[in-house]
Length: 374
Image (cartoon, rainbow, N blue to C red; front, top):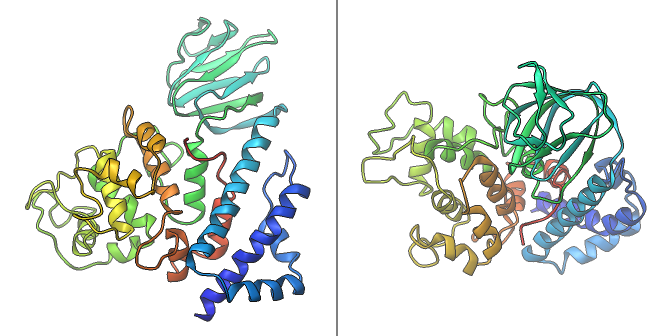
């Protein structure tokens, strides 16, 4: 109890300070208030006020404080990102999203590694093929394009997420589309997302995900990945035999009522996971009652009725291919949903259990850019 009291006190102080801090401390260059700022400016009077407030506050209010902090941080980050159009020189991979526009300086080189993009002028040269690239033509993956000596021209991202390797001077016109990569960064900061070992960035947001990969992903999301990997129980699914890389994890998920099969003896591990599949996993994580409060068949509408996700979110998530970027979206915003056994938001329940540190929870929320889909 004492440990959780300290957690609430820290979050209360964050909330009390963040209003003033966001009005006075943020700039386009440094938009997010740092943990050091929050920690180093604590005043005894605020500690005393927070202790008094703590005595009157319940789990729902505690969760509200954290969500309010996260909302303000992501909104500030979005404003700063849109305003920041300064030029910079890099030799690095960039994670981008739909509507982002890179304006390239003469001589700058860009390679599309994942996702889709097109040139917004005829001022790019495909140096891999040794020919001029047409205006508004799609870029070819792993081809190197160089900007000619004209002032105007660059690359427009047309997929929900994309990755490029950029060498040279550029400026970025940041769109207000959902920034899935920033949500992946947030989850990674909290230790709740490890990405994909085969991906160029480690996130592979443009890829689909199998059912067995989804099990591993949501077990990490709820902070039990290591426990699940060490689990020595069994499961009834013959298509995930002993020796399979995820056998222990599936056995753990099955034993804890988090994942069931496509039949009594099969799990269909290599089948692409759907939004319906993943939302069912997540609702079990929140300990909603399956069969009364939600079901696999109706989960897409159940999550709306229960207020876990909005109609707009479910429409967007269930439109087109269900890729890892959408899994990341659902995973991040599930953290703000109420875990039914504790009454806390899932992220604070994870903090209370020791699966996520408070510092990581706050730092992670500070990495998100923009808000939810409305």
